[in-house]
Amino acid sequence: MDSTRTTLPTVTLAAVRGTVPTAGLPAFYDAAYRQVAQAVEREGWTIVGPAVGWYHGMPTGTVDLAAGFAVEGAAPGATSGDVTVVERPGGDALVLTHTGPYDALPDAWARVEDDRVALGVDGRGDFWEEYVTDPEPGGDPAANVTRLVLPLRN
Image (cartoon, rainbow, N blue to C red; front, side, top):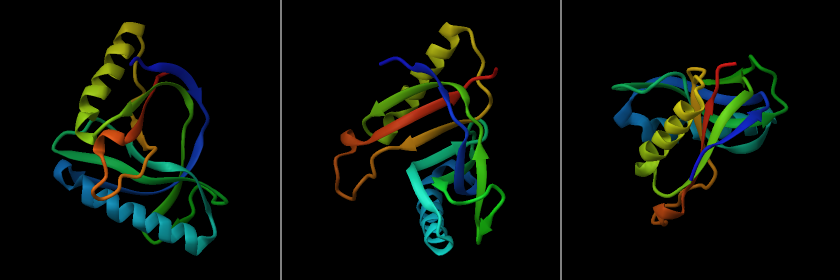
């Protein structure tokens, strides 16, 4: 499956940002999503999209990312505990929908990168994953749907 080039809108996110070891990602995601859901309920905001992992650079031994949800009813800059409301800029992007286990995501990202190179465009420096399906304990990892988004430099 190839990436699709599209234009995405700016989105308001409620998220927890951190720099974590790559091995610590599952625990970070679990804690961040729980904190954001609690803040959304406490503050009266509304979740309007799937869970997101927004990476602020290429992962190495550590990852700088924000984990949360697109929201309505919250102003950028608002905070609630460790949760901050930010605007994720829109613009041109390559998007690929991956169906399958998370451990196959590196191969899916490689396809996005191949498409970027073939188009002769540069990435903006950030990228994100939208976890369209919510994996269930004991569920089938082959049924996971993840949307990979690589914003492009204008």
